[in-house]
Length: 382
Image (cartoon, rainbow, N blue to C red; front, side, top):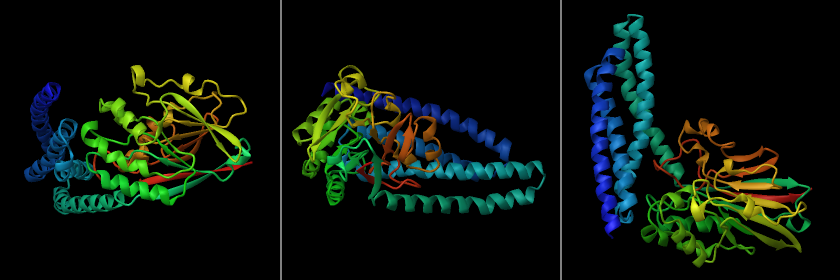
């Protein structure tokens, strides 16, 4: 309990420091906007209020869900995270207006610049609100996305096998047990032979969010349910407790391990590793996970992030998540700067990689251009 109070005090001090820094930055930016764009004072102040408000609400939201039980705070947390998303799109719109206003100023067209700002500002606000509203609806409607993976190396007994990849559930901050139940029903509707949980199932501390995972015990697959850790489990500080809870739910957690599953009399190897940010007992160890595999084994490698791929290790198929497909436009364009693939099926270093957009949300409770999904992979022999 003492550690919890210490964490909250440090969090408050950090938030006060952030307030001071943001205040200084806002004053500086306000002056620069006046010089560069010549925008009216009310427009500059409104833009800054949106950006600063979004930053502060986001900081407070992160402090709240990391140190408190998020369940009774979810409406407030939703608003704080949504404000961040709205601030992002308003900032993009204001940046475009600023560039256009600067061009008109350089061309010495004050009347055109004034008209642009007068008309463009409400248009930016309206478009940002529409995008957020549509994104919020989309985020609440996960669907199944199917991919057929054909390879001569697929064992005959596994021809037609259906593997459901469920990643990035992210219960805790915005969603709770009811969301998990809804996703479990969607997975079971796909009639999977095997279910793989690809990490980032939670946000927050296990003592509060752990029970939100309990419906996962009702996942139905004749070959079982496997899981690996994601970065959010590790960042919570409660990864061992979360993984132990999954064990108690009847889920086989792959802690740098492999299992051999049999279907139609033929074996298939599934190896899983911890997320790459793990240290100590949670450090990813591909060599251990893949140890003992034979050259003729069909190996499915489960790692939370696509970039955890190990080339030349005999992996036939990798299953990953983490990217959210970008989740919020235009971040999908930036994912390739960090990951070798964003979503769907790709060939990376000779390995077929299936990356799920994930079913939940992280940060703003919206999805724009990257709908939530559970991913169904059907294996076919050559």
